[in-house]
Length: 177
Ligand SMILES: CC(C)(COP(=O)(O)OP(=O)(O)OC[C@H]1O[C@@H](n2cnc3c(N)ncnc32)[C@H](O)[C@@H]1OP(=O)(O)O)[C@@H](O)C(=O)NCCC(=O)NCCS
Image (cartoon, rainbow, N blue to C red; front, side, top):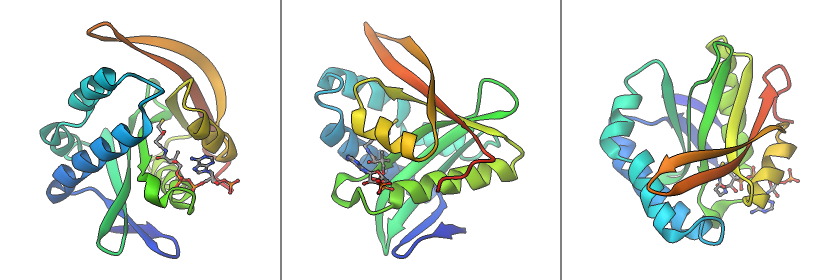
């Protein structure tokens, strides 16, 4: 299904055939991006918790969690995962990843705009996310996309690990510029 595009990239829903490639892309991006923000052992733990291909395949069959991918030609370069939020009006943008070799080309904005459009179409009016307090570039990106920090949280995710995060949110009547 074609759901959007910019000059070079094509956004579409993740299908069952895509889930292995999405999980593999997540591993690549996480090991490039997160060392220095969280430990490698926490990266291993969180990837195992959040990116099992079978779990992704189950989620995309529901009407409560959505995954979309962005490709340049045949090459998968990023993805977004989002789901019904903590209240009936909200969607949680749980995952937003663009491979470092193509960051800074507008693909992140394109995916956020896409998630916003899809969420509005589904009747939601607020989008929020959690981002590590040390993930400075991504926090700046989200601010430019219209999100503001609304809360600070420390979430115990088991095995002695925590997510030390900001919650950032935006109302959906203010689309990405
Ligand atoms: C955050 C992320 C999704 C943004 O995607 P992107 O394709 O790089 O973003 P865009 O090209 O659409 O850039 C939008 C803006 O962010 C800026 N930007 C993008 N990456 C940046 C970086 N690493 N450092 C500083 N600024 C950056 C761009 O210059 C642009 O700024 P502008 O509006 O002033 O022109 C992507 O960089 C990413 O996957 N980061 C690593 C993983 C991550 O932390 N994800 C979020 C988890 S909560």
